[in-house]
Length: 328
Image 1: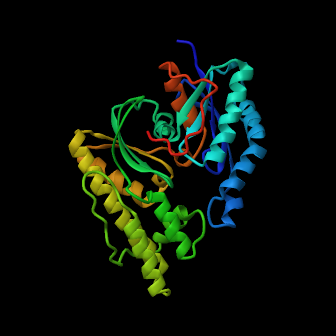
Image 2: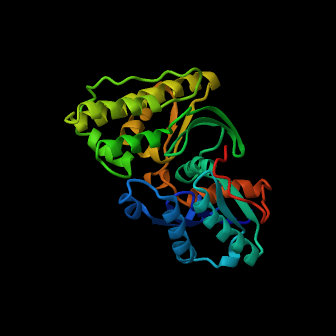
């Protein structure tokens, strides 16, 4: 079979990223220009600033990705772009650039769902991984349990009713003075503390989640007791959130009889959450976790997902528009 080269473009939030991936699994280049230092000043991502920085950076990032891959642009079989979900202005920058490349090179355009991209990050980390499996998607904008029946066949079994898990981490971190991005900062501080603070866990029927209540409980506790031990608070928050997460995952395993669990999204880099999922392996469950560099937003995952869309004939035309609230 002839090799297939996909150029992936990701600009859904605050990372301008371009990658070249061969046959959906082999990363030839993965260039990321992060805006974290810019948005840290504001305590979170400012959409207008993110969009402007994508415009400034995307051309240079693309050139670097092509150079690192050591290929000619004409060798690309298709251009894969994130078209949702995400910040609409940020999405439009990457999508518009991808459309222009597609038109100029006379190569197919492949729109990729950002969530599908996060799932596909595991195909890069684990070259032998194939569906079906359960995926636990955890990020700043999404928390859901997905039954991945095939490469393009997804069934969402449960999702958050309010805040995404990463959003809860970021809001808690901001209130207790840790700054942005909150997830990694809470993770580091939690290691220094003891989970000795009782926090309420929201119970939702079925496989859906709710993280708003525990987030509010932590914020209220900090307001009432500003001198509360932050290390212990972080450890307690992290433990309670993970218990809520694991409870739903175990229900999903029972419902689907699946013995393969795949993690995806930025929050899957959390050390405590990863260790709790690793414990499932003692119960005969195979657990797959993407490399840390592939947990957060990147274009290699978009190129990988784009490959499976492309070989299955899922091609888009130049009328494709950004869909900020796109569902899987």
